[in-house]
Length: 365
Image (tube, rainbow, N blue to C red):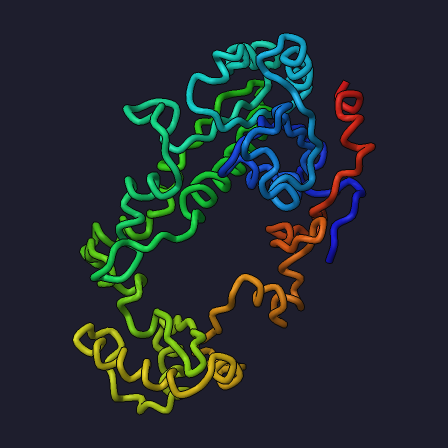
């Protein structure tokens, strides 16, 4: 599936958002909102900036772009004209930058009473670290999430920048924007939304906080049910160097796994950690006997919860993903299709035509 240049008729159709160009979570949040039909204008720096067009085909899809120098009075007035007609603005500067530019919440909401002003940072708008630099790895380190990921006797594993930037940042930014816009439409009053990646990641850790508080989680890596310690919830190497992922948590799925591996159903007590070392060795030996794809075929139709570990490129072509159109394409680059899916108001990833980009100011007048 390839996107078109026709307007998306998604559930956010009619919502206008001003995006102040940034890196990290802001571009992905706005791409998701644009996929869902929001009319977003991305305000880019005139000089492009070091990161101005990084990932532009994917991360900047679906919205128009206008280049402005926010230190120039005329350009700043042009931006304020867009803000006057917007439902929301989203920015990812360090605290205080927008205020120094004369574009802080007091100014913007003072002009547009119902404006939602979303601010996305790592550490939040206040607190002792608010003005400190940081990246995804730093934010997840301070929340306890990074400590919990990886093998027991090795340093923590870096989980790409999915957990802090995108799960704790982009997704909470999108949720916060939509929630505040709904509130503004009901009350007529806008507000500031403080999206901090540390806050988002802390919220995402809720299950593990609950387990820890109940004495059912050890505060160590590689020692728990869901962190790779359990033999039935981890990855195994195959004969060809590929890997399979095993997620047979429930007893009936564990039984299907043992049956598929040719292991006697009464050989191991699933939830007895004392059995786990021997169980791991038995599973590792079994999976090492066949190739990854052979195991996928072997477990086809089974509820053993065994799947191949695909590379990024392989995932594009897997039959299950193709059948569901999990991926789409923008300007020759493949990426995830709009999500979630709506029955009555489907969104669409799309390319903005030059004409659409050029008439942004006129459309919002």
